[in-house]
Length: 200
Image 1 (tube, rainbow, N blue to C red):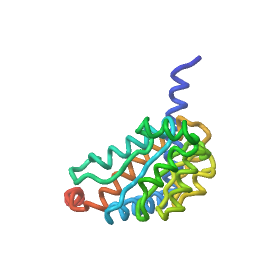
Image 2: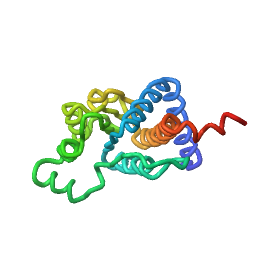
Image 3: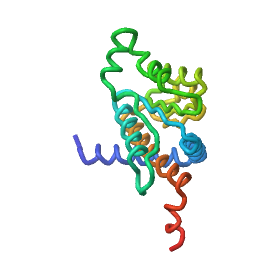
């Protein structure tokens, strides 16, 4: 097996998907950033959730909002719903694993908040149920999905879809999109922090 060729193929595919996403969905990313910023500007919060690698992305992005991304600014209200093992396991044990996000959305979500579901397959039943619960409560909804978007994308006001069937490559694009959204939201909410960039 030619390991260098395998490495080059993986990196080339990751770059190709990112470039394709930029070409096809740049305006959708901007719209998503504007929606997130509007929610946070109004004093509401962002609830993020997913499974596996998408769960890691959810808590990663929540940390970027609550702590900071690249500029010093006030903390922003975001919460990853996949981090409390007692809540997750009690819901899964007493009810069903499909309900682990939906019940938390019902408990914590309020009209004005944003529910952000992440699923590389677009078919994660608990992410679908979480977004459905959010819509029923009047929350705004955002999806990061893969493949053809699936039911996860269908439940979202705005869906960002990486059109690939390779989970690792989808996840690589997802975290790039997440970081870009963090940056754009900061630009929208704290433009004064970026004023010096345009003055050189």
